[in-house]
Amino acid sequence: MRPGFRIGIGAETRWDGADRVGAKFAEFAEERGLPAAIRRGVSVALDELLANTIAYGGAARIVVDVTLHPNRLSVMLIDDGSPFDPFNQEAPPPDTALPVEERKIGGLGIHLIRKMMDDVRYERRADRNVVVLTKRL
Amino acid sequence: MEITTRTQQDVTIVALAGHLDSNTSPEAQAAIDAILAGGGRKVVIDFSALDYISSAGLRVLLGTAKRLNQERGALRLFGLNETVREVFEISGFATILSVVDTEANALEQLRER
Image (cartoon, rainbow over the protein chains, first blue to last red):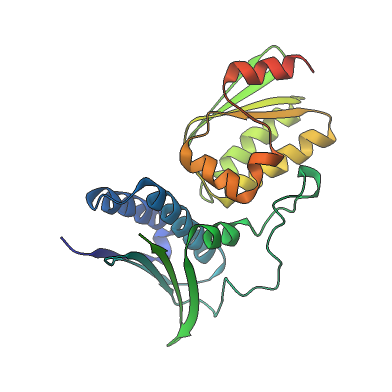
């Protein structure tokens, strides 16, 4: 068995592509017997990141690479859109203690990714955005 | 995603099935908009067949809660699975929205209003 998988998403098949990545991850997680809590966290993070990239990045191609290491799972997302670091934005993180009336709509996706992953990194490499998420096993 | 709406007296129950994410949240938003436009002010959302919710889905819920608050209406949610519950807890939605255990609890609370 391969220790991971790689999927490419083209411009025409974006949302279908995101669904395909989700389905492939679920299958992979099942096959490798990943704990339910890890599956949930990674599925959410992967979905949030893909949704962001698809909606705002203007990328023609997105590649998702998932690798299972002995003690961690890493998810790499590479896209050829304009430079964008999702983890270094000026908007403050949402205040999750505010009541309904005062809660702002937005900023939740990145917050979920940060909370569910152990490490998040971004770099601009060879005209590509490269995001790496790590979850310890 | 599948959305089923039914009413019981003055309460509208919306059952969401599948994934509530960036792809499907416009559909859910449209279903909820239709309820509010039709004068519905007591809304129960049934999550028992919902596998997954992303931040786009949370935005729909927050917007709905805000609108119902302004209109002196009420929102109750029930049937959250582990994945949805975890997302609710991390985002703080578990405390700002009214989550109950069963449909019966939800209806009972809204009838008293």
